[in-house]
Image (cartoon, rainbow, N blue to C red):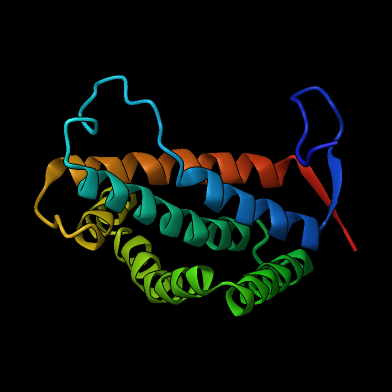
Length: 171
């Protein structure tokens, strides 16, 4: 049975390691091409579309951490989930050079996206994360990239919070 649950079912039991694996799956799936109803992204050069997919994967990697921190603030589950998530990321990075590069880039993004949310208390957090996303895609002044980053942050953060809320974390 997959992790998570339907709206009317009881919470699904999950270990922190299962959650970590689900987080890695979220990262991988976020990098797959998506349908764009407005075709705005489809009109971009392939290099830019690849940049958006890769940055979305990095953003989701950070969202996994941020949502866990936010939902389990001051609870023992927070540390357990994040420790297993980081451990799995480290295992993948040791075995796969591509994943190692991804992990290195993710570690660079974590403080930047965290600062954007922290600084966003004065402005819109969504907007701040969107502008950092655009900057990482080498389009710091491009509203399409900013809006894409904002939408990716909002959608993936909400999905991750829902996923975590539907779980009963077990040892």
